[in-house]
Length: 220
Image (cartoon, rainbow, N blue to C red; front, top):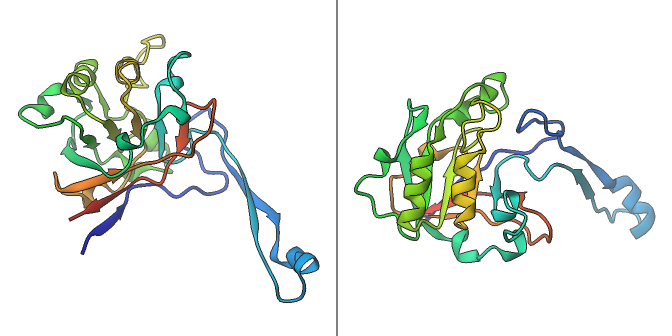
């Protein structure tokens, strides 16, 4: 029997995913009590509202996030983000993840997930401290290998604590090559090294380069 593994953080009202970005506001558009006045006694529905930045919780980036001429969410090929054969690479204890972790691995067409363990700090100030990230050389190696997608359980796939103006080289390298990025994953410790598929499908919204996903894996 296949095992479904949830790899997404829960989104709650007022939570903070990334410093400086607005927190989501989750509330009701139609309450159950108000619904009875519309549909009759005992007939209740709840219709919710959420106002949020597209970079909230666990989310996926496509080229338009970085490049004005890159494709937006509507141009995302489903075969890059739905039931993609996955590989999970254990990088715990490594701050700058170099290309050596990819040596000897068959990565073509794979969703390559980097497990750093940093997700355990999600929701705390420590999550926003210097965090594990990929190096530019690792991003280039992923592109050369022909990966379908890259993901990480950290604040950012780039080093956000590096000097301003560094150009976010990992985002630049991957998104220029059309490789989607999933950030703020969690629960990667529940995955084997291989033998699973990965899914992280965003809604089909025109004009957006990033959106929240329900990332998950199917093992077995």
